[in-house]
Image 1: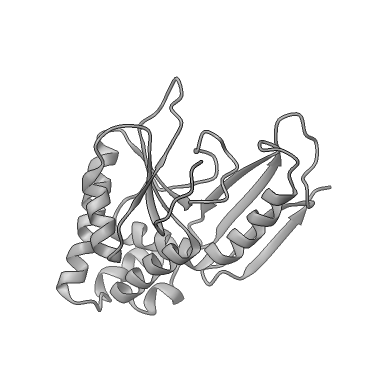
Image 2: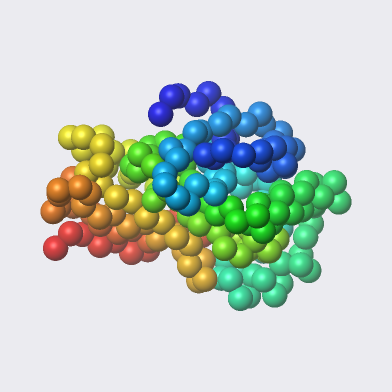
Length: 221
């Protein structure tokens, strides 16, 4: 993948995703790059919000500016969705920018696009699909929760994955999957890739809380 100069980028296969690009740019005050995702036989309907560690810090600051410390203390899905509409602290203009992003992603989803978030690099999947956090519920509260949790976990996750990536003898030796739980944790799991039976550094799973602290680690047996 060619180097991306921008801190934040959109990953797409094809199509016009300018509304999402404009919304992310307005929320973060950043010019976005583009990460081309390899087209497969299908499906190719996707839009990905990708960023470097510094880019994710900018996204996290934007979300924290809207919801304040409430999102830190209540990162669990059910509680957060109940209280989030009551604690918005940002000026109306900033809230409007975030809702612009929400609506643009909801429109993408309504048109059949899968919405996900992730790191610009390292990427383990040459097809650009596995090592992403997919977001099915694009309500304002759930989108904010996902963006906030990922932004606060991204530094330790990036450090770990960069070490694993460097330990490969060739690309494709490790498969990475990620998801954010209803309880407010980010789960990152590794599996041996093509023709492999073990992982380079032995650790197959790490679970991070909403502040980015490792609360669980599993090693290959």
